Amino acid sequence: MIDKRQRLKDDFEFYARNCLKIRTKHEGLQTFVLNDAQQYIHMRLEKQIEETGKVRAIILKGRQQGVSTQVGGRFIQKTTHNKGVRAFILTHDGESTNALFEMTDRFYNNLPPQVKPVTSKANAKELHFELLDSGYKIGTAGNKAVGRGQTIQYFHGSEVAFWMNASEHTKGIMQAVPDAPGTEVIWESTANGVGNFFHEQWKLAEKGLSEFQAIFVPWFWQSEYRKKLPEDFKSTDEEDKIKVAYKLDDEQLFWRRMKVSELTTDGVDGNRAFKQEYPMNAAEAFQVSGGAGLITADHCMTSRKEQVNGNGAYVVGVDPSRGGDRFAIVKRQGRKMYGMEAYIGEQCNSLGKNVAICKKILDAECKQAKKVPDMMFIDYGAGADLVDRLHELGYKGRVKSVHFGSTPLNPDKYTNKRNEIWQELASWLVDETLPVQIPDDDEMQADLCASPYSWDNKDRKVLWSKDRIKKEYGFSPDYGDAAALTFAEPVRQDKKKKKLNYAKTNIV
Image (cartoon, rainbow, N blue to C red; front, side):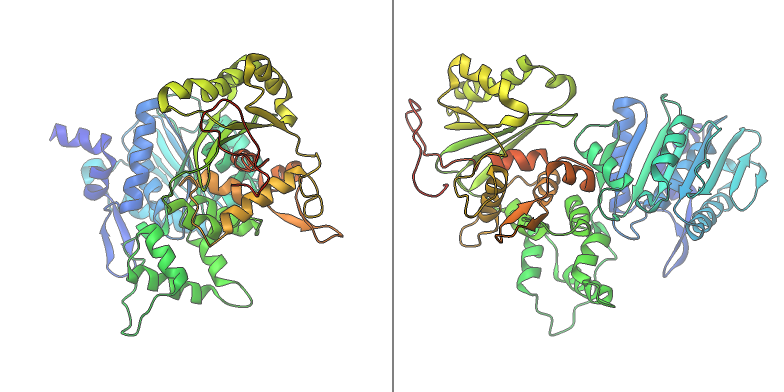
């Protein structure tokens, strides 16, 4: 009995299926058994506790995947098994506040007697467990002061992308949560465009620039998101691509088709709405809601799953860090792009460290992979000193700086070098005649899709400025710039690696 009580305290999955009841759509009150998405999130949270002693997580999800239910149950377990702790849940509107507290109240009322503490306060927004001196409270975003002036061990931010005054709320909340072992802060939401607080925090977590871990759960992990097929069902070409890329079955495809149709109302593009509400990857959720660019999520989807042999010149693009961004590296050989690397903070905060990073690729890899780059292109804007130093070390023949504002090779078609390399990258990626491969990575897709543009008076596409992209999207597309740099100039492979020649034809 003692062992079981201890397990109920320590093992949330065991606690959930033995103590918690949830209201299901079709079967009424049922035991809470974690679904696939909830099990994945639980695994990620427990791993973070094991590694850091606390939880700091931001979760991007689709509609109705049970994340709020899971976090709510997790915090009920903790507040009913520990003394002197407080859980606080902040939702985006009053209706959600009421719904979450109704769920919490249901959890409490159906607890087995041996794990059900006595309450001294139970009202529409709060439970207080008197003997434990612990509590559970729910509030609504809107009032900037909500959550301030108290100490909180467990915080759950629900649908953070839809909060009013999100940055003000989180400033106060984060001050209320001690930076101490055992504390937990979990933000979760569906996407709501780019440039808002949730999107900015997601990008920071995804890039490793905050203490939060980024957790994404796709819609197709939900077993209920499938629909019985009609006899005449036939998948479209687009659906076939999705089926192969994400290993879906026809019932999942048909559910998706019906949901897209349902979302297509009053001039709304159902396909775009579906990708935001039920994303298949993190980049898709944000980039679709942020508008189309030179490269879209659809362009990336197939290329992420391709397997292509790299032939031709081996080219490296380097986007040095500036203003808190990452030091990003991407490699390409012909129609295969690979080798994403990123360095942050103390890893790249000096010229010497930057030189060492590049030097490792330029010569140390020769000993490991028996090949060296034919050319390394480095952004001049933040890498001028880096290029000079590499030239001094003898790499002048294989290292070149690229000034984004300089004259392009084709000035009739492009306004400057930055527009040229990005549009050459886009042409390479969207060309359907030959397959290309890019890293199967959400960050790469997000950076590539952060390519909005306008037109000039000569009908040339003009990318938004990097400052505008960073302001509107909330991040700098470091990997995208590094990838584009591999298209800076045509490069011919020098098989003997004695000298570098330039081709007079198109980029290979």
